[in-house]
Figure: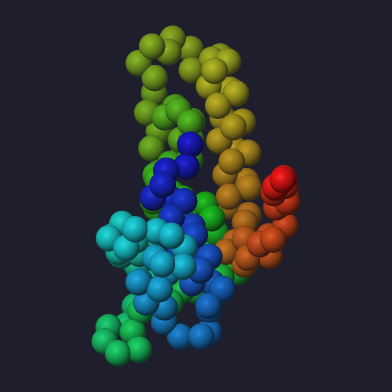
Length: 149
């Protein structure tokens, strides 16, 4: 399951992508606009900056901007930075592989086989979806029906 940290990180990155080319965005503005606790957002954006996805400017007119175009930042990068490996079990992870202690035959393990398919499907979607793609999806969700009487 996606953590709150990764969810907030994605929301903040989409916000910054929408404002790409308009100058730096203040953390307070992003936090208010996206309903993210400011202190939590501070830590998230600093982590994204340290990993090279954001640039920042201090002082008047300062804030955060994307370090690369929104078309070149993937959801997979962001999720891995904030949540770690995508694999549901360590024995199928590309970056944090660890053999299961209870596994007798890793090559013949049916659980591993299915979890490898899950990891591959998740990685395929997240690594092929950019921030620009996320922006294009805004408003394409299912309508929320409200029945007021």
